[in-house]
Length: 319
Image (cartoon, rainbow, N blue to C red):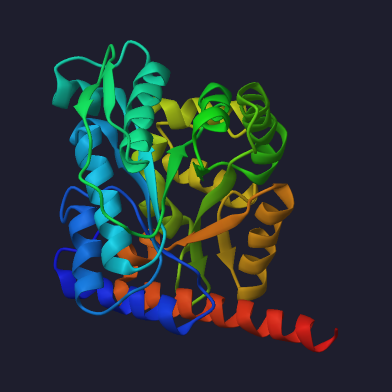
């Protein structure tokens, strides 16, 4: 969550110079994420970008489509527009009432965004969102729509209507045993290919006097207090104790939900997510960023991406 534009540039530079494929950012209430990514593109950092996720109540679907298409144009690469509902109190604070059916709200919103991006004139009056009109035509790299997915019903909807299912703090076993079958059910029902899966994974790399549990707690404490994350983790077999979040953070480490330790330890966790069915793993260093600052975050990302590149080169040399 940068507070000035230049803070994002070392991260875009890392994507340009390393084996990383894309720069992802989540929802920020400091610098608006599309604005921060546009700053990076304007500063010359033309790398693939994605959001994981931006929250529906903050913008009309027309604005969401416009911002996503703008970033595809400015970056020169396909853009992944990740969308999510946000926690119920947040929705209620912005809209005056929560979504009676979050699934219905997501379906309406995503349908409008997709049809606008396809160049269609949309005439839809839904229970939550309406649109009567079209975006002016503009030739850009494609925009792919992602949905934040935590539980089976949203995964089924993502299987029906999204290009990418984006998971956050979901254990590999839960991804393989619960979310992937639900994604497949939704895709089968809609007679379309299953969406790709992007797993966002918190990372903490070994360093002198670094307390991984504290780093992971800094990264996850807000989500661990949210009922929808608590429900997902409990369903996955990870007990969330709202009165002892430090112990809960330890359980996230022990279960392999987060990637901590040496480079080998982190790569082992990343491989476990790929083995569980992820197509892309996002290395999230917000905990390091919070506890130790940008230098620690960038050091960890650089070390992991260098190790991935070296591993890939070694595999290639044996062929």
